[in-house]
Length: 320
Image (tube, rainbow, N blue to C red; front, side, top):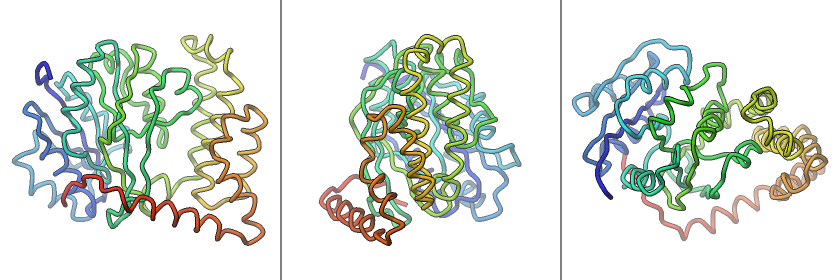
């Protein structure tokens, strides 16, 4: 690595005490010498404040006060950030060892990139590995078609963030994706095929507790892209693929919410618009179609096979 430019990490948090200490330690134990760390708590009523105070001497700045949601909390930190590289890590996610150093190196090696991103491991509440999310070296066209990047493994160049602007407070579920789209207008994006972060999949996480609402924001983003001049050419060329991607994302989260009928309908709309967009989710389409026949055991068998396959993989886990 050429040098160690200043890096700012922001952790927004609200009532996530079971995971918060692991998140904080995953930042503080990074082997990176020039780190600024903020924790922005939304006046939690659980044990979060005690955990934050335990590490307050190692945290650059923290606050615990009511806010207007996740985007507002993150923006508080982003506006205070002085690092050349900026990221946020939610209080139920965590970094893997060396993630910050690898991200900085990737930005140095790709000076035209607005942001870089790695891969993400998904774990349950017991920190048992249940999935590995591997992405591609995508660009603006793929983002517009709702190729979703795991937010915990994204690191942003501050100069690009200042051009693109901060998070839009009107988004609650796809706030990160809408920002990636704006960032991609001001520079490239680079994928590094390494595991940089972990994400907890638990009952309280938005992608489970409020899964059915993601599709509404996907449609809002479609309308926003269609009306935004900077996206006009690519939107006109790829409108069916983009709309199919939004339907596929809607179907994906409806499936997780176990609304299989609605999920299947969304998948069928995606297939009608652009078959390739939904085809990669063929097993979900099959499960959604068979669920009325009482064959949901197929889904459970598939998940069990995947879990067994992942048992042989031993990713690094940060300690709690």
